[in-house]
Amino acid sequence: MSEGVAIVGVGAAVPRPLSRDVSYREMIFDAATRAHTDAGVTHHEIDSVVSVCEDLHEGTSITDEYVPDQLGAVLKPVQTIAGDGVQGVATGFMLIRTGIADLVVIESHCKSSNILRHGDVLEMALDPVYDRPLRANPHYIAGMEMRRYLHESGTTEEAVAAVVSKNRAHALDNPVAPFGARIHTDDVLASSPLCEPLRVLEMSPYADGAVVFVLASEERARRCPRPVWIRGIGWISDSPWLAMREWADAVYASLSAQMAYQMAGIASPAEEIGFAEVDDTYAYKELQHLEAAQLAPRGRAGVMTLAGETRRDGRLPVNCSGGSLGMGYCFDASALYRIAEAARQIRGESGRAQVAHATTGLVISWRGVPTQSGGAVVLNAD
Amino acid sequence: MRRQRDNATTRSIAVGGLARVEPRVWRGAMPVQFLYTAGAAGERFFQTLKRKGIFTATHCEECRLTYLPPRLYCERCFADLSDTWRDVTPVGRVYTFTIVHVDREGGPLSSPELVAFVRIDGTDGGLVTRLLEIAPEDVRIDMSVEITLAPPRKRRGTLEDILGFRPARSVAKRPFTRR
Image (tube, each protein chain N blue to C red):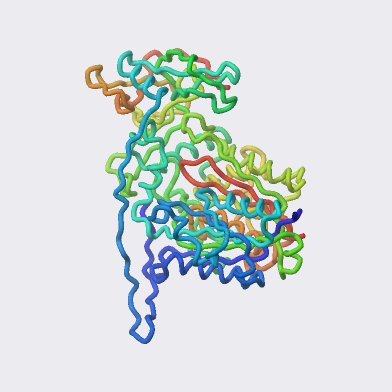
């Protein structure tokens, strides 16, 4: 049985809006071989494989039948999880902690450009009797959540727009982020309304991509070149009913972070967490998630953002990768992109996007509308 | 949302000794169809709405939670709530709202839709619904609203019996408490 669990291999396909030149199997194969090389292992050594995938995102049914070959997982223990990416990492973590495996591969991918009408997928996730008959674009849920969050926290729309400016600017320094741009806060505020108060530029653009991690037990990780330790992990699903949610607060993120902090022995998150990669599928989510994770007091995340404190050179650098706003939204693989970018920071491999003294980082993930499911991961250099 | 399309990211593919080709796509659809059931709690809710024009909810005494839509169990303490029914007047307050500018395919709507979550008075739940008889700029969080139902003979016992909620005509202030 292993106490410590580390990410020893990171392989990520470069996210991009369209990828017709490769099948998703080839994209995963690319990420998998990068991860194996990064870890210094071959696929023969992998004990178990976890893939995070969802039938309606693939355009296939019984998606587990499409998994094993491109991951080097033929004739090996394989499981698929239709959930947030952090749930996949948590499953690998448990496989190692229980002693079932020493080396585990975690994979998630997204060919969003294959989906002609993503709104249909979101709509099918709504309750068929109480919610679906409304027949409104399901992003209304984000619009209503943002309105209530602004109302209760006193956060301004300027602060939400500042998240977009910051993350798109951060992406300019990340060579694999396709959506880097200098966008002034005023330009964000002037962009078209989507589901008011949510604007078009405040929603992450879709991208295609794949991420593969190799996770290792403590003993095995010590033989790998650059382990990044998973010191805490948490994942929570709140009530799925629209009728029972808080709307203003990301309770799933609060509880996930608490679970991860407790495991990691972190008592004062705001002092001990050096940087964060948090879900920003919609710009307000970054602020909501920072407050949920106790990295900002209630209603202060927006103020901190406007003051530049969450920029790469600020007191709490957030989404220096560009986040989903700058790298693109990859459904459940978004969580793995956040973790991959946090791991690169801890290894000091982030180049121009590198944060100074990035030793302990936090990742917060969210499964997107209409869910209230998310996760948290605390990563550390040693 | 309309997907951002960037043709510059489409790469041609080398196919062995043949000339490079533009990647093609194979189209597919999932023509699956389903039936759903509202369950015992949902049937009682919709039949009560159809016949009496009011809501019905279940209540957990232990957790002090009133479920609307009703459920036969408490999601917190897991108690059986099948004998805890109570009638509820279909009035409430706008808890949050949005003005939807895009249709279900992401295209622009000629007339934006006003969608709100209305917390029903005396319950911990509520419904996502349309707001009627009010201009978007006049909507406020916490404003009192009441139901607009289809005429009795047109009701079918489904969510569509609720046409929406409109500003309450009696403006008496009701104390708002939750949990």
